[in-house]
Image (cartoon, rainbow, N blue to C red; front, side, top):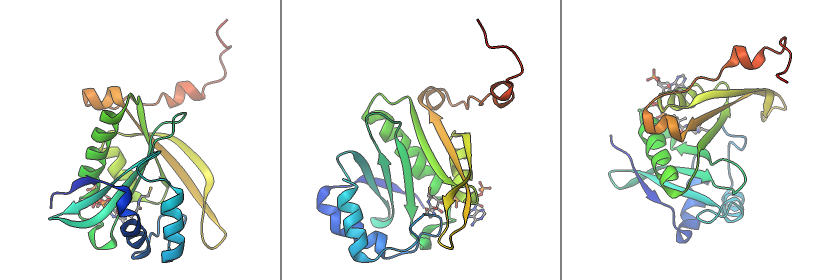
Length: 184
Ligand SMILES: CC(C)(COP(=O)(O)OP(=O)(O)OC[C@H]1O[C@@H](n2cnc3c(N)ncnc32)[C@H](O)[C@@H]1OP(=O)(O)O)[C@@H](O)C(=O)NCCC(=O)NCCS
């Protein structure tokens, strides 16, 4: 199954709202969308202007969508949604890889970020396979529908790593060592 990306077009607003409202998103903060709420969200999110978005297609059928927040003062951030019928089938990695290729081609971005719930194992494995490194753990940062919280995790891919096929590790021990005096 080979996925392809098709750039979202403003004429697709209604189709995107229907896409969001036609499935469940258990690993997102909003797990269900009414069609009205989805329409508002798509309009407010300014798909195609501040954000870049693509449909994920297999054999010409839409099986998902990827959106990348492209704000001027922060790094691009990826949000991917595959239809429940197409999760767990190995599509995440090629979709994220192609998204990163397109985002790096769009501008002079040094990094691409992705944030997810710590228990979203599939997403975390896909990030890791695509060369993203774990950069942060935000304890109890992700709100749940029952009023509770789970940890949130932050991954990022460096353009330089993407170009060379490496993953520069975060120097956790060194960064966490504050016993030494600060350099003069
Ligand atoms: C998260 C998502 C993009 C992952 O893509 P995918 O194509 O479903 O993932 P894959 O089939 O390639 O699975 C990736 C890995 O996770 C594992 N995995 C998949 N589902 C899993 C689950 N429910 N629990 C534990 N592991 C799981 C797979 O076995 C695979 O392991 P491997 O690395 O050893 O091969 C996709 O499932 C999705 O869109 N989910 C709904 C929306 C979502 O969660 N988006 C992320 C929000 S930030």
